[in-house]
Length: 316
Image: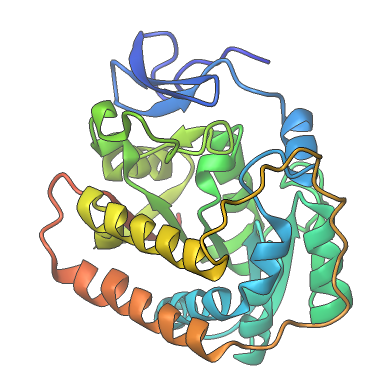
């Protein structure tokens, strides 16, 4: 465990923001950045992920091919408006589905991820260029990429300023960075009371648009666009209704029998040998969720709501 200060303001001061899973998130008095302190070391986080002691379910993410492919295609539509071809680096490539879609669109993609089983699946099953490690540990030639992409990775980075500077160094002059993250720092801590929705300590930092622009300015990027999508399905009332429906479904599926408690540690994860088959009903669910998030969410009132922020930045 290590204690940390605000990456923008240093030791200017903090106040409690939210506590879950035995970890404390605080909010910086100077800029409003939300972060975990004290926090696990980077080596401990790697152990937690691969041991599946955090909320990262390796098998579920690999099986979730429909959603991953949908998200990849939407992201590549946006990337293509600014940079339709070239070398592309994905930070936190997970199972490799984004890399596969990028390859299909004519990019020359490379991915890195801290989780070994994901990398083995991406390389051995999908046949894409994925490498195990972090920005600090994987050797990549400087100024060699046209695009850097990452989705829901920023909150996991132990040293965001250093990571963004390194991403900048990997881009050719005028190269593009596109990424997606949440707006937690714009919302009051009371919004999360009684929940584990911040996924501490999986998520070490939480930003809002103000903090994202500060991050870009300090690391050699020019922010070109910030797209905001209200997460309507994460509003308290719809979320409670969805959880209730899921509970009823599980109960009926098990003929009303209560679920047995998991007493033993889960078996070690085994990397599958092939790509899961697409599921029609799940594909339809993904399309509906995508419409609600990206189409309705783009036009819904966003003030005070949890949102996804999609940022496009250019290397200066």
